[in-house]
Image (tube, rainbow, N blue to C red; front, side):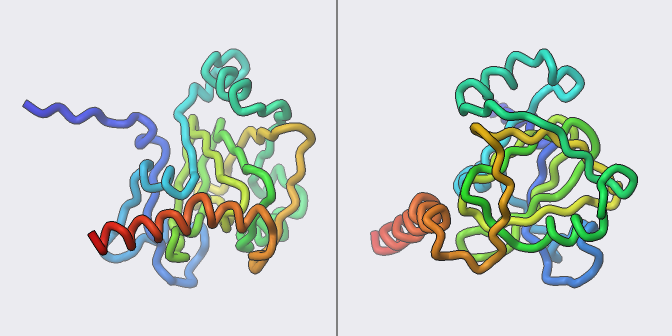
Length: 200
């Protein structure tokens, strides 16, 4: 008898390929038929994820271990919703502009939900839906964007190594060292491996 071990992260982190529709960015934007992406596939793009206890983040030993192991010394919170975020409309447009950072982007959803969209190796959009308890790390140099879903609310813990730098570099910024390093680590090696597999 084969027993499949379900990854409990999948209850709070879902990912799928997006359609090309210009409808409201807060809608799911599934392709037809739906095309889901596994957490392993996200990891191949450098996108890491955890399931944590969002009701006890102040005393959570697992969060403490992750912060110590990865050097996340800085922490604050960001609430994104029309009532709490100054210049909400402008900010939400900025978040949804495709960009990269020269450092990791670490977000831990402690309440609400939202979408992080990331580019795959073929430059297609993958939508990653984060719900309460999900923590995600986007590697430096990956093109991405953020939007709320139709619930219009997320409260996220932001973590950073050292003093936080939130500077977005809107696409194109392919000349940045962080972008080149990302491509070398996660895209070019993958393409080279596929070529070797195909030739074998």
